[in-house]
Image (cartoon, rainbow, N blue to C red; front, side, top):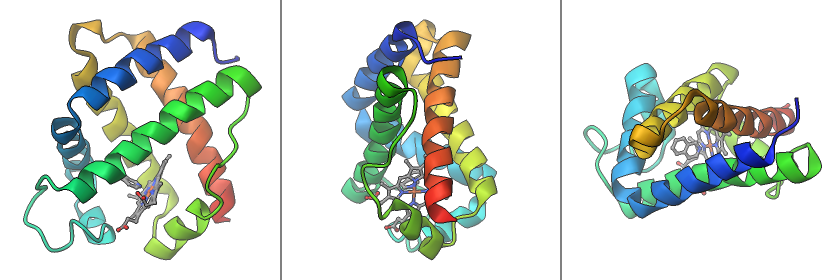
Length: 147
Ligand code: HEM
Ligand code: ISQ
């Protein structure tokens, strides 16, 4: 199934809402990740030495990049039907940090839960699927670059 214009529009509008409260949503995103995979805390240089998830500009900018790349993946899927990595170093970074396949599932679930909070009463199964498909396309490309 190809990525539709409507799916792209769903991702676009919730991405705009996400950016409107980055400090809050980035903390929420990490919190969802650490709930599922507490040990992942040690992987992130800016979380290692803090207790719990505390807001910091670094934490925000990393979360912003992830959501930005998934948003960009949605656009690529709609226009080209595939996802190319803009940053060729992404594979190597994740290998070097010790990221493994199951982590990608954890991050996906955390992303979808965050989007649920972002969308509020505008949330729908369709919206969630659109983000999920865009994430999977990007994750597949990153995992290829890791191997
Ligand atoms: C680093 C994106 C999946 C853990 C990075 C960076 C980007 C990125 C752009 C470069 C550093 C930055 O500027 O933020 C993504 C995307 C993913 C993904 C788009 C999925 C589609 C994962 C997963 C994990 C992970 C599954 C494991 C929990 C890390 C860590 C770093 C990193 C530990 C280094 C952060 C640091 O500097 O301490 N990622 N990532 N990433 N990523 Fe990911
Ligand atoms: C994965 N890679 C880079 C940054 C991230 C921030 C939050 C959650 C997952 C991430």
